[in-house]
Image (cartoon, rainbow, N blue to C red; front, side, top):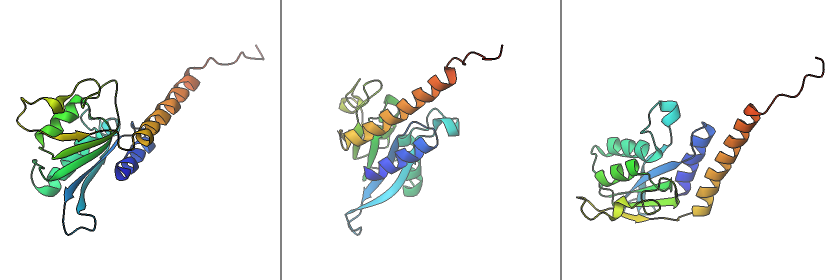
Length: 165
């Protein structure tokens, strides 16, 4: 999740909503039993692409690296609970597990607003774990939106009276 947070910070530095994601795969030869497959961070504004959420960017890179859109030996770590679009893409990729940091009470599709991962009618099941480094992930988002609101207020602030009419 720390790698996902680093990706989220990159998004924030680019004035994107700071969400980051990483895809890892089991690898017994790797020092910790996992290898990094792909990374991604939010890019909808810079890419002019409403689908360029961190999860989708990381999934696309992982599929290219693995040579397959199916990623059954992979897990995705993301700093914010996936939205419905991302949840369905994660399910379609047949990921083994999704781990997220902060809950999203407005668009979360892993239990906060709805739970697409709990739909047993779907052809694949992906396990989900939430709340990993939740405070740190959530604080990064809160700080971003506080700064964004302050910039907007400064831009919209009334001009001072002209002292020399």
